[in-house]
Image (tube, rainbow, N blue to C red):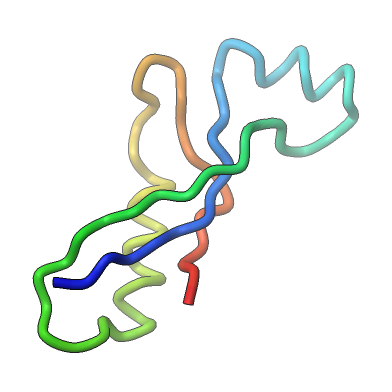
Length: 74
């Protein structure tokens, strides 16, 4: 079993627009680390990790929160 970590920005749909206007930034959110347990013998390939990052970004918002700029931590 391996633990894979991703660096991401957690955003909130309720505050996105007002915060972007006030800050003048493209992305406003909290930096976070997402940890997943994989049941594999060896290290997962880089292509697999990048595909997982895209799938995490594509998840629909849950309780107004979603993830942007998801990148694997090597």
